[in-house]
Picture 1: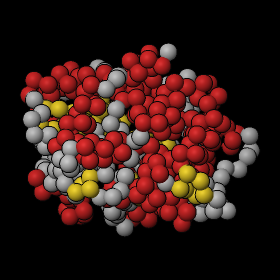
Picture 2: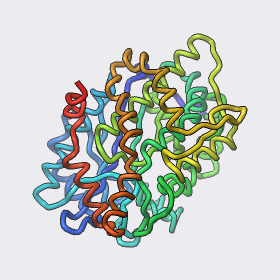
Picture 3: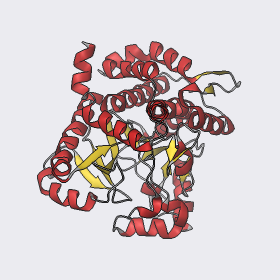
Length: 386
């Protein structure tokens, strides 16, 4: 089958952020999204951002417009959050984000009343009902369809870096899992989710989609749920591997890393240089290590099997690519990666709160609410950096 890849401006950025809705007193999830979205529908029609529902009624998703810089996309996200807050604050609903809710139970959640979601649950059953997961999606524009799969395969080398920086799901249904990102391993249980197949060309992708549509596995390309996927409708590569980020500055940092990497790989292809790919078994192992150990992972970084700490390789990558971040006008957001390395990712902060409160996961939820509500906006954060 033929799948057109839309025209988009090179290295433009779009961001999607899935947010939990929680009761302000108990911290438990509440299925108030349909009411909230109804109140916001008319007021958001003319905005750059969008506010929509997701699989479960305990979630709203905020989406930016197309940003020529990370800052522009994040500004849209901040505006969307401000709009959502006008509907949630008066009814005692708090916003927060992490890859999972520390203690909520799947069987107490309601599925959004849309045909596509009901079909998903009917097919996937227990695993589908267990998709109490929240993430971010970062789109970056690509100027040539022939670059899409070389860049996706090169990005897979950095999948553990992105997963470790964003890891924020150490608890699941009231239990400490021992994983930095339990979400990463839960999400891949869905059909068509998980690591991208190591395809080499757009023609191979069209063949894959033809097979999947012909056999009834999916209806179209939007049902490809890979950790890194092409988004033909938008002309972008979309990174979906990350847990939900707990603060806006962290979201901006990870989005800047994705933008810088995509542009770097695009320039390498322009110069006729080959990109580094890893064997699929190394990519899979790296994903598991990052899910298990987060920023304490030792990862495989080249086809020979050389291993380094993910933090060490992140710092090497930052040093090498900071000049490009300056060109893309995201250097300060890019520098936010160093803040995550210094302060710890969300999973580590959540575990520290749990340990300090004798395992009370309600305190962990309160911590996440405080981080989301009281943490610095991106503008404040960047102003503090000077």
